[in-house]
Image 1 (cartoon, helix red, strand yellow):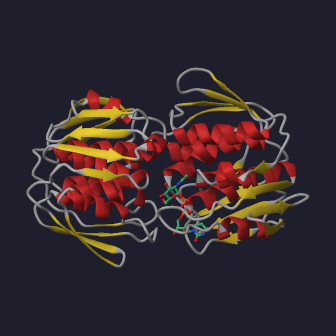
Image 2 (spheres, rainbow, N blue to C red):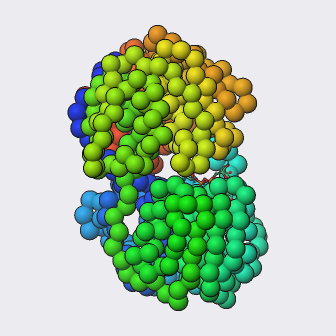
Image 3 (cartoon, rainbow, N blue to C red):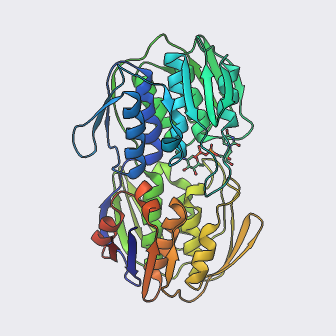
Amino acid sequence: MDKLVIQGGVPLHGEILISGAKNAALPILCASLLTEGPLTLGNVPQLHDIATMGKLLAHMGVKIEAQGEHQLSLDASHIHTCEAPYEMVKTMRASILVLGPLLARFGHARVSLPGGCAIGSRPVDLHIKGLQAMGADIRIEHGYIEAKADKLKGARIFMDIVTVTGTENLMMAAALADGTTVLENAAKEPEVVDLAECLIKMGARIEGVGTDVITVTGVPELRSAQHDVVCDRIEAGTYMVAAAMTGGKVKLRNVRADLLDVVIDKLRESGAEIDDDDDSITVSSAGALKSVSIRTAPHPAFPTDMQAQFMALNTVANAVATVTETIFENRFMHVQEMRRLGANIEVEGNTAIVRGCEFLEGATVMATDLRASAGLVLAALVARGETVIERIYHLDRGYERLEEKLGQLGANVRRIK
Ligand code: UD1
């Protein structure tokens, strides 16, 4: 398994391009199942998760053609199975996103239950309840969700927890249902908005995206479309924290500052300087950062996918901060590993109390999930000496060419195969 070796202590300087968002690209790839016409996508990041979704869709019969480094064309005119097998789903929870589109277009789907994962139990009950409200007959048999519906019908669906992929699955299903579906307490994440924009180009009738009530009026069929995936705000946020922590100056291009309001706000509070224009953000700092407390919550509040990175920032900041995780019950696995680098962190329930220390020291640590790994990379970038990060396949799932981009900024990072 590959490892990353990082020599800390180099302030990052320079310019990098931010990739398309993994969490927007994944549902949009699944949206290709909703139509016979080809879906052409641009700004698709080259990541393991994208390749995994590609394999799952190809297994069903979707013809996928790469038309350039970040361009894909997907043709779902001939689907020969509506089954997502366990072997494929278990490696990536987002595979559940095929359920809504398959059921809506073909009237049946057999999708393995995703099961638990490193950051918590993460059930899919709200996806299932929503589809049942639209008239689907759903049973759980032998670990599979067996779903059938002659024709889905519009319904009013209230989700008692804000769920990103749940909202996306139901929005895709509703696009081809009979009548109008109202999704209440819907997720407002930019990736949900991006999926909706792609669906609208395909002919879907969707209103209220970006608010917590989304109304979808079903249409008989969707058509071919072209869409460029929105920028990855979490990748951008990660490099912004890296610039601030190392006391450097980094310009990110192909990014939208309006998607990063809370991250920008918190970085400014920590003492970093941030400038933005149309499609770029520049972060600079002198390195000595103030501790900043955060509390994760659904968009537009602080994203859980940036929690580990701000934990890393606080380990070397000048005071005490609290980091409260309200979305996932087991998303502090980086704490143990950061302690190995000398961080002073105590955990009480879903809150971590982080006392900034003068310096971290390099050590061998293990990546446990995608964003935890990103937090460890940031800590390693400021630690004295060498840090070895094991199990970096998590990073390859969600950060396109991480070591290349960090290297472009002057970081001393190498991958060992
Ligand atoms: C998505 C993102 C992930 C991000 C998360 C929260 C993708 C591919 N992944 O994950 O990176 O960390 O949003 O912003 O977009 N829940 C239920 N029942 C359900 C569904 C969810 O109880 O049916 C709970 C979950 O256990 C969790 C909370 O709702 O506690 C939010 O989860 P959700 O928004 O669904 O996360 P994902 O969509 O899986």
